[in-house]
Length: 171
Image (cartoon, rainbow, N blue to C red):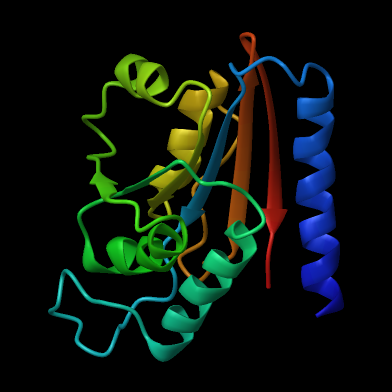
């Protein structure tokens, strides 16, 4: 519980600092990027598995964390594990429709235009989540996530063309 409180405080301070610089400016875009929660590996032939019980619990924990913020849009790849990770947060934010994206075919300029001034959750994979964060940042900063790591939270904020970013590792 203490770790969760500290994490929420850290994210809140990070976000509040950006907002405090110019409260009247609605051009602040905040992107929360996560990898899908723990996938079911019980059938190695299943290329589109759902989540394990631990993964379902992690997806719920993510949604509880994101309750602290107004999420305006939720993006996910088309896989069951990403959709199932995104769903609790979408449901907790006025039953948002999850927008499906293809990580290698997304038009980043259009995406940035569509999400300008919004808070957006993006759910991807071990290789696509850091790559997406790097595209938002405009630099190669983050490497692929280890296949057993479902706990990274990347926060990228764009305000008046200035980009800031942070990686928080959850348990």
